Image (cartoon, rainbow, N blue to C red; front, side):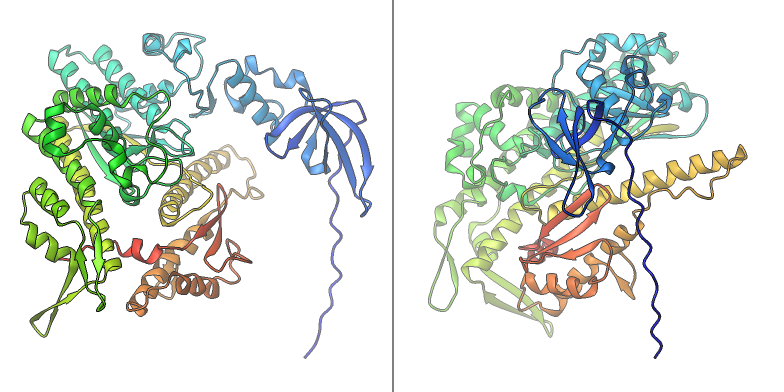
Length: 595
């Protein structure tokens, strides 16, 4: 064998031209790029230059950075008061971009354009004047000099729709807590008002249907949102809303499609988090007669609501929110019987999760609190004995014969949780289906779609739910990159510009890692399914982790944790995330016994 030796090319060190005392921008370990002063230039033990920088607002603190993390920016190039579109910047870098966004944010300009795209930074306050509903007329009348807003995107979509440029879709993406749900609601309000102003038919029915569409939001938030450590009103499901129009531009109705409700939150919210809002709103808001009828005395008696050690949300009054929910359900068109059936089902889920099990010496389970099962059966309108049998046994069909085998206490508890999750999930689907029956038009000439899915998530412990959410965001980011960069590159080619050296970001390898390319090149999901199939009688999550560690040992977007055999890392477009595989097999199966 021949051995070829190749001289390694020496990396060219990034240069920074500046002198001590200059105003600079450097990369802060917690705040990213910030303004500061260059205090000193020195060398480390490898004779590499280090720049000692101090933040402008904390001149006595210093940070050592390399040349890659320091830059000189001229103030005249960064006059944020004149920059409403980042494409108009004369100095374009990560530091300058973040500087302009920060300056605008501090001046209460929370929206900034990037061509046809609008960047929004959540201010967590409702007092900014140009964000009030009263300011919509300025945007509808296309007043000169108004600040950028998500209403600009909504306005363009509606006018494009009316100019016969095809159906329109607005993608609302961002991290959890970035304000996607609020943005979706304000866009719907704006389009409803714009339609009423510009469409020729000023009918009373139009305001009624738009009000019904808007009132669907409190219902979806009550049953599908929860407090997380990142967001007090986090959407734990995704949705695609089709606003339906006729040729004249009148709003005819809307259709809602939901995705990926987070079932695990029903039974076990994370530390300092709550389960879904409706549980707390119902217990605190119902009448004494309903409280007695549904046996909902206090939140503290339900472990599924207290396990996260958080039962209240600052600034959120559950009693008042219950009144808003109740009114919204009536405005949308739900009957009193339907409303009561929904709330009774919510109560049944809570009581079902309180069922406990004993186990004898033969590892056969039995219900520890049979009165609790009787209460659940009464609320669901089913037979208590059959419910007990379904929770404590498993029925198999072998050779056309029915074989019943007992479950141990752990398996019975898992069956209970699976049943509660399925009931709640099916109820959520029923609620959306009922809303659609009242607000969806049978005829629709054109539509504007709004995609609002949960944002990229990273917690102290990231499990199967975060993996699914982040994969959905990864796929959406791929679509976004492909559409925008390919469009821009094609436009440059049309203008005769050389774009051969442009390499747009490509996160396809990460998507292939998770989803797989084909049967010969499976991804993480396929390996999880296969590991469950092969180890059906011995479901140990570490086997799955070992399988993907072996399969993707040399993958650029994957790395096993060096010290924890239950964790692995995925290099997402938005950042590196460690996932813990504990419980993945059971969660992926999401199995409800047919009996």
